[in-house]
Image 1: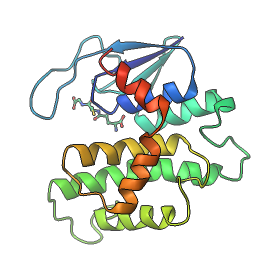
Image 2: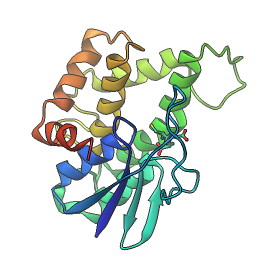
Image 3: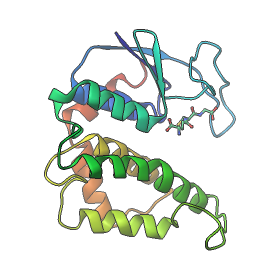
Image 4: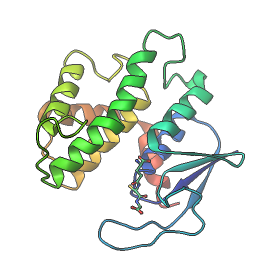
Length: 198
Ligand SMILES: N[C@@H](CCC(=O)N[C@@H](CS)C(=O)NCC(=O)O)C(=O)O
């Protein structure tokens, strides 16, 4: 049995969305976390190694880090078609865009939001504008990051840009707003929203 370690309105909400897309049985374990505004605290019941969410337990085995959980789930449930399997021509693209999220998008946007002036060559991540250009180029002639097929990548990127827009951290250009709408305009997203509070 899968158990998602979850805190409402956090990075684990997108795992809830992915699980709903996969259509597999799972349980939710709601935990407290330390929020950006100081509310909440690390939860002793959270098995995540540094007290965060998401984490996933599969029959007691722990997986943590959003991208690892996504890859784990799409590999474990290949029939859902939400992540190209080993041998699929799109596998390399899938892995690249998963890794780029953690290694590029998150640090680039965090640095941008915190107005950190990172000197050129001093960090391994791109600048926020470079990351945006890469994503814009990729979506120029594709509805989703892998082309016509919706995948776990669109759960990851769609939820992130939806969140940034909702909290007012990003004024999404038209192409990005249209992409986010395509991603979240799905029954599984609505189901996940309805279950977010447990
Ligand atoms: N890179 C991690 C980040 C996880 C993360 O920072 N989650 C936040 C919620 S959105 C959290 O648990 N924060 C609690 C804390 O900072 O202690 C992932 O994507 O899984």
